[in-house]
Each structure stands twice: as C-alpha cells, then as structure tokens.
Amino acid sequence: MANEFITIQEAAELCNKSIQTIRRAIKSKKLKSKRKKTPQGFNYLINRSSLSDAYGITFESVEKKVKERTVETKAKKTKAVKAPKAPAKAESKTIDADDFKSFTVALEKMISQHGDERQNFLRLINTLQEKVFVLENQLNLLKAPQKSWYQVWK
View 1 (cartoon, rainbow, N blue to C red):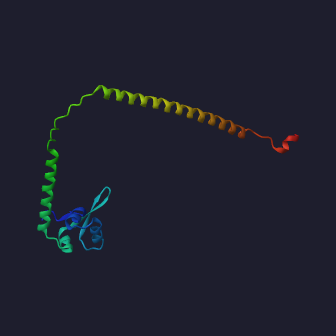
View 2: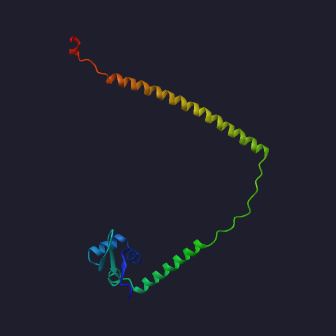
View 3: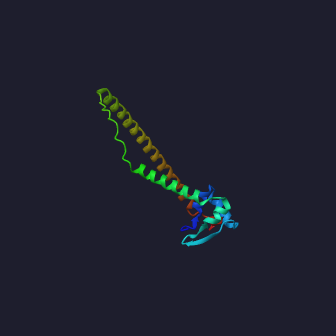
C-alpha cells in the first residue's frame, strides 16, 4: 500500500466518527499512529490497518468513498465554472411627471427635517458646552488653595 497512514480528519470522515473520538482512540492505544512534527505542534497519522481493525472498515469501501468524494468535488468545480444565465429582458420604466413631483416633495420634506435636526443638534452641543464650562469653573474653585482654620489668626 502506498498510503499506509492517513490523517485524523480523513479517518474521522471514513469511519463516520468525530475527530475527538479518533483522538481518544489514539490516546487509549486502540489505534496505531505516529506523530509528525510541524511548527505548530504534532499531527497524528493513523495506520489504516489499525483503523480497519478497530472500526471494521474494509479498504474497498474506503476507496469507494474516496472516489465518490473526488467525483463530487469535480462536479462542484464544474458548477462554479459555468457561466451565469443571461438576465431576462429588462422592463423599461418611464418616469411620469406625477412621480417626479412626488419625489421632489419627499426630497424637500427630508431636507427640511434634516435642517430641523441639525438645529436641534447644534442647540444640544451649545448647552453641553455651557455645562462643561460651569463644571470646569467649579472644579477650579475646588482646587484653589483654601486657608486652614488655624491660619485665620496668623
């Protein structure tokens, strides 16, 4: 066999088990594996024969599943390459004078609302600036050095 070892993800897909189940089987020594060092840590490679012994998988069924997956992926790729359908005839819309008038009225309402909101916003900013000024003055008064009660007689 050319590919005697497979990855945990491949083993999980072939057995219809979760990746965590395969990891537990490796830890409990039910599956023979070897570690492959990577910069991020280790990748475990599982022996195919131990996988077939532990979960009763025949290599023929595994090869069928692999062939099915390759066919599915090729089909997905060809679907992605197909050109999109041409759009149906676009309906031509005409703009009537009434539509234009209603649009301009709506636009004028929006502009006036915007002006009102802008004025309210500016009033709010002015009141907040005044409050900040008052608070700064109060803070400065609190920071001012106060004479102690006993320094009054000096």
